Length: 248
Image (tube, rainbow, N blue to C red; front, side):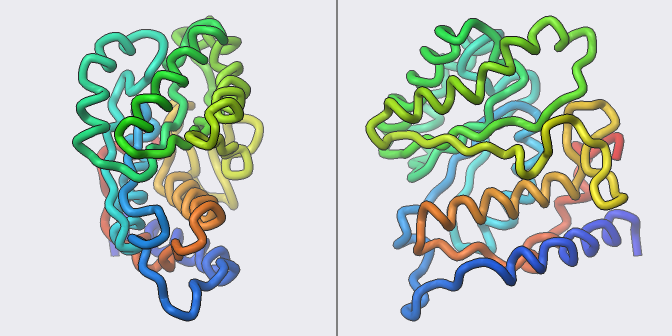
């Protein structure tokens, strides 16, 4: 048994208790497509790109369409690279035909609160035109290096800005705080196992899996017809061997 396989099995065991606590679907066994959660589009930077791997497996197991356009070095809607990103973003959103667009705020969402708000509001409007609700999700706490350190004050504004945009969106957006997954600061290990990459930025398979289970549970609260799949249907799907998981 390979190290990756062993790790994946450990993830499944870690999450089984969370699934046991999930609320059951209604007696009719309503399929996910009737819950308002038919297709999910995931947007963010390279952190999100790693998290998209177990998310893809989980949504497949749930019968929900899933597309990730998270990208290395960007994926953001404000700050550096955002102008270039916006050249193609509306077309990508429209092509995905999402019912829900999940935007994990990126480590490149630099700018003033006013600039961040303008970018987030533009995303909500663009998603709404495509028929999707936007859900903002906070990114994991990072251990900033010399590259990120000058921008930490700006990045620390993003959760509040996202909440402000969601509150004023007339139901077109919501905001989720993932601090229950990650804690208040970068933590390299969880329960004695690697959870975050040694680079101080990215996630390890265990962290990505914990985030996936949390997000599925949060979505089930908002879409009662959606039943999160059992972890053993997606945790061992091979995604943990991906080369994105370095420093774990």
